Length: 502
Image (cartoon, rainbow, N blue to C red; front, side, top):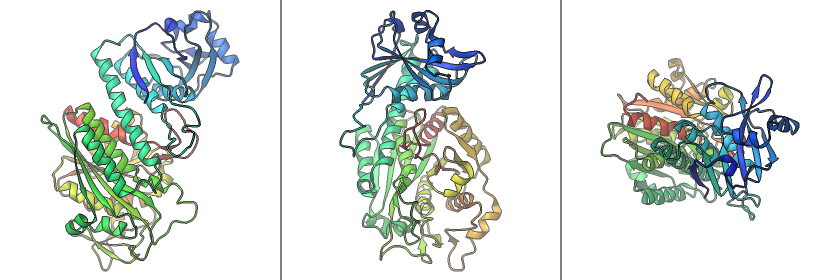
């Protein structure tokens, strides 16, 4: 595990495998970011010229290595791009991404010093979190681990704020959030023959024991007794039966109670409505919502937030078999509503519906569900942006703002009343699990809304696009599981703990 700390050591005198500086695109060429002054001095004013000769532009994603000159104790200088030069400080997301690029580029190094802008607590946290996320690599199934390269052994964030309480808190927050995001990434990347509802529940129980969280697991017998028709219907075709897992964190001084509900389809074949070839290969990631809410609650506990937060993990495996739910079957959901299943590949909304009703029985102030729910949301917003829907306009706006604050791309989406009609036209049940084809992501949100108890504020985050990254890594984002929405949930909980509107 990578060690992370703040250091006030002078960059020039610090012994390390590499010293990282930030550069940006200026109107007249490369501009050095604050923090790299000692490096510029060691190059006798020729640093920008050297970097430009080697192809550096200062653009986001740039990473150019230069042998360290005399005057520096580090063996190597790495210049990472921050994008366009700005006055008054770089945005936290620019710092997170640059630090992530540095950590990925320097994999295999024992000690790396980050001389990026880090004078405020916010900057310290951004650099620390980006670097920690950038160290992530998933090598569980590779005989040589991460291609033979270990993550950076030690990261030092260079700042004048080492002894300040806010800097210490910033690093602690970065470590707690970063480690839990990386835990979520591990879960998302795990092969589905290893991660099933039972083993996921066991991981949650182990984390609960480690961090002092209350964990309750409903197995298939308890689900049957309780009438959880959605979870049972989706999981009925699999040899791995479903689970509903409750992970609860409470604080004695809490003034707000939150429920985070996560879709946890550990593998989604589509069921009887089988997915076509080319659409199955990454369906191990269909539990990314459950991973996100789980990670967020553990992070809340590690940070000691003065808020009550419960994660509900709706876990099932959607497989075709002789016992699988068929198109045309009717399920009686937890709470009594009946649903005609028209498409067994619209299964996420079924398990979430059960969990939302159960979460509502505990009267939280807010329910936020997180799910890789619809391909329609990817068509609407692309691969890096999640949709935000809610039964309360202010809550929707708050979550969108929170996501932007922590560097996650989101977009507020409507819940048009006219789209509800298609789901309520079932001739044999209260609802159908499908409605109009156009606006399918919004139809899914409207379906979930039907299961929210009156008087409870509810929001739905459809993370289908950003949950699993199949292209080349960028910034602090690796290939594979990303832990999308974790930072948004944690920040939302922090604001509720502080008495904010969200």
